[in-house]
Amino acid sequence: MEKKNLDWENLTFSYQPIDKRYVAMYKDGAWQEGELSDDPNVVLNECAGVLQYAQQVFEGLKAYTTKDGHIVCFRPDLNARRMYDSAQRMEMPPYPKDKFVEAIKEVVQANAAWVPPYGTGATLYLRPYEFGYSSVIGVAPAKDYEFRIFGTPVGPYFKGGVKPITVRVSDFDRAAPRGTGHIKAGLNYAMSMHAIVTAHAEGFAENIYLDAATRTKVEETGGANILFVDQDGTLVVPKSDTILPSITRRSLVYVAEHYLNLKIDERPVYWQEVLDHKFVECGLCGTAAVISPIGRINDHGTIIDFPSGMEEIGPVMKKMRETLLGIQMGEVEAPEGWIMRIL
Image (cartoon, rainbow, N blue to C red):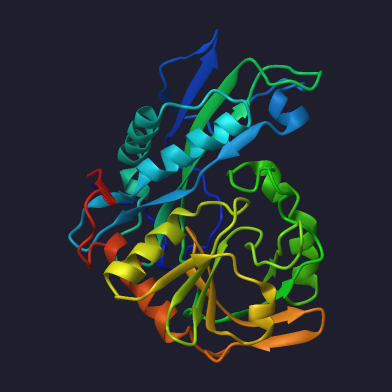
């Protein structure tokens, strides 16, 4: 199979349409058979539920070329399960989990020429999503829905190596107790736009959100979970019902415990612990970057510098990141069921 003629090693993390995408419609109370489409455009009525009341959920995952030349995806069954749960919370008919995984296979197989070669640092990013399609003027769920998957080749999140970032504590709340913080819905990201734009304007890479009820506990950032390493080398994982259950975080925790023999402490993390310098490393985790190290936090003028510094990722986070990337790329033996081989 001949690959597309792209400058693979200099791709950015941006959208580029590829040959095929997957489309399935929900009508008359049932999902119709999905199919691949050449058309990257979505045509909607002006009163579509997604436009009027933001009835939409989505996922993000990647297809990789491994060291031995195979094309694989990483734990798509967990994306299927999370999207199923997200759709239920939004009163949308969940796309069947088995059909989700099969649709991922179809999209990757049809676009194999767009999956970057091994060693380039690039991947094929996949975006499954579902939205209210039919017209809704009163506040109510739509009757008809559309499920789609598109892909786009993207470069590595970090150009020139992984460098620690500076973040700030936000004055805004990311999610309310008993709200939608635990699901992957577009509305959660829309509310963070103002906060991230102002953070960037002030020289910060991201916002850290504290819990909305008491503003005493660490939650996550606008688009990633947070991890800490304490002075004893324990991986400390913030726990809350309003934190999105990250597949990358879940995988990193397993890697830390079973590959690196680290102790894991998953619990509520109080902001005062950060102020008291209880942690030696901190990082954000997600699909795009795996781990993005935090070197400094600004809490309204109070500066918290982590001992890992602003020059290099800390040793524990570095090993976790390298191990998970090795698993994804076929360089490290994967736990059973983690890697779905497509070609």
